[in-house]
Length: 285
Image 1 (tube, helix red, strand yellow):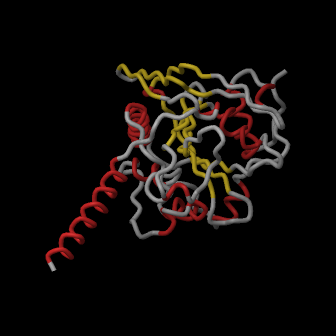
Image 2 (cartoon, helix red, strand yellow):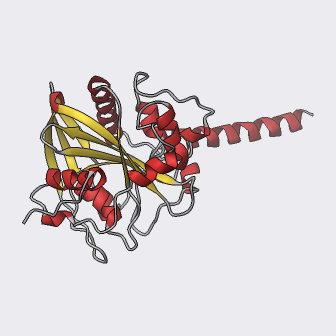
Image 3 (cartoon, one colour):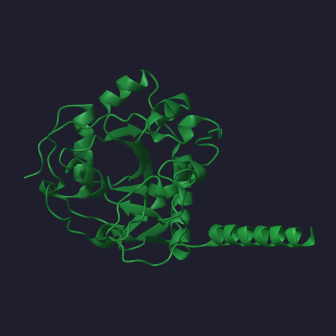
């Protein structure tokens, strides 16, 4: 009995040690794909912020992106609004990618996408998100980068834009929380998790109570493809019509002009929204 107890104790200690090591491990440095090579973070002085490694890549069908990493300055006192961006994945209704974009008075946007950081030779695998394989990677970028990246694919991915019906003070608090989180994981990376730190759950985790509160057992918290009805129920987006009808109205149309024909990112952002709200204007000469 004494030997059996000793063996069981040794096995228990060994398994506990493995579990502890697994729980505290941090993502190691790797050779990242070009679009995820640099880690963004934020410098702040009062209302003035500078986003370091702000991405502004140019995408064209069938060619490698031309990547620009910049330092972008914004004044938080001029934060003017925000939109929810949904990217459904084909006919699989439960699957979608969620992004947030924050608008400033000068027409510029900061669009944020929470993704799993990919090493060269890898590709996104949702199953790997259960096993702490890839770091969580926040992309802070221009809309002509992250939105056009999806529209420039063959075939294009659907992209939906929903204005958020929230007070500007709450949106600012939300944005500040996201920026603080981005800087924190720049200093100490964490793992992407399909359940707890994904494109959807990360934004929910960071949201102020005044903006959103989702009970843990609501399945729409975990399945982004069903999130539109959740946001409607919470009064965060237009709830005057069924989710299916709203999704059709807020999906960017085919045939939009590429950002390269516009004078600025702000001009292209205004153009794609006008395609939803009225006649599609021509790009600037």
